[in-house]
Length: 248
Image (cartoon, rainbow, N blue to C red; front, top):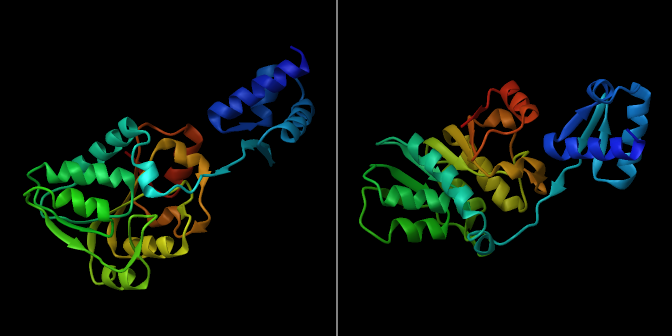
């Protein structure tokens, strides 16, 4: 195999797996580890990868900060799978918080159409519209606070103060891989939700494991489970297991 072909093959593995090791690539392509290190150095010059000790990882990207209204119609089939998984975890008499999330809008629809008797607290306008559009068994509570139109919900100090008065059985939230978001007020509000929850479930699309926001509001050790549409790659599962985070 020519060097160019090997480099392309390594790139394909990186795109699929997210990371590679020098030792495994050396064995796979039957070349020395020094040869692989040189390949990775050359790949780093032409592609979005980052060399680490013993290998390389696909460089992370910053997810485009879209308004909530622009995200509502994107990847609906995938989001429905995640929402249904989350719905099946919610039991009668629980008090849950649905954070600002397009997946949570779909989850709210499932709750509104069900017979589950749940106290639902939310800071998102779209969720309020969904659950108040028809008679149901839900006890509905809105946080109020500072209205952020781009997020379609309430954030900031008044919202945080309201949240701190409650204890939630499940805090249903969404994050961009390393528990990040784009706006500080949104991040501080999410942190308050986590602090007031016995269990925290992150609902997110698998692709968001590879993206970051700008503001870090929590750590993996702060959450109980991640609900996504498919099982993440083995390296991600290994990292999550280190923090005792379940993947559902």
